[in-house]
Image 1 (cartoon, rainbow, N blue to C red):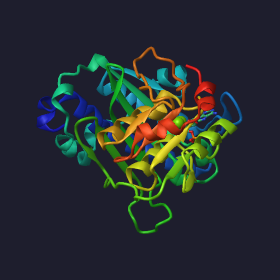
Image 2 (image 1 turned 60 degrees about the horizontal axis):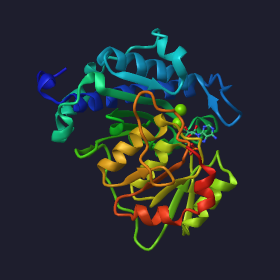
Image 3 (image 1 turned 90 degrees about the vertical axis):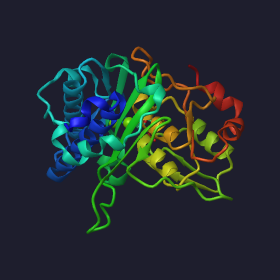
Length: 317
Ligand code: AMP
Ligand code: MG
Ligand code: MG
């Protein structure tokens, strides 16, 4: 690590290291797809899959984060067995010169500079968009590392391992990071076009309640794509105005990193009723009251007001 390590706020270091750790997980995900041995298993249902890439990426991310930040709480999607399996490929983020040199550019606001390692809860989705990964919709896949303090999403990293994969010659993959009240980096933030309401929502976990909520915001276009990380990326790059998901399907590891980056960029993410999503270590993993996220410059309250009462009533805490 660079000489400045001890003078840089902890949160900037966690975000900077998480960039390198997520990039490494992306390499693991691409390697497994290249080998073609996905090892698909069903978790709670046929709509809820896990592959060898989810497992291997989680092992690498968790063991690497534990090594760097042993006092923080780390919660990964793929469960305790994977978390406790220390055979994962430990990646030393300080060996990644490109990310360690850029940590000094990760701005942490004054109110977060004193956050201690033991106060952090790090939510890890090693592969968001598993259904789409198994179906070859590779640019829907992201790696999510979200950092919470005081029950709030404060920092995050989204890595998109297959960005540009249909663009031969262009650099493969991109990583965006942010700290709420601090800085955002990794891709240009673009406001969505005026005069349209482009809604993004699930493509593989729909229901009549999900569709009622989408219809209620009067979309001019609906982008049904995989992954919470990918959908928030669409908000950040100005390709959608609002992400509407009136379902209890998303978990804290799906929303923590996207929420922190979106809020760092001036957007908003709440549940479908407008309540904040809590991220402390003992919280229920499920976002049982849905998700509504608005891009920068959008009227979040106006979108919330359009969600029908029966949709809100269907989603109980
Ligand atoms: P989607 O927008 O459908 O790609 O979902 C975003 C995230 O929430 C992914 O990690 C999904 O696996 C998860 N998710 C959403 N709905 C469900 C569901 N019904 N069952 C399991 N996971 C879900
Ligand atoms: Mg996910
Ligand atoms: Mg996942």
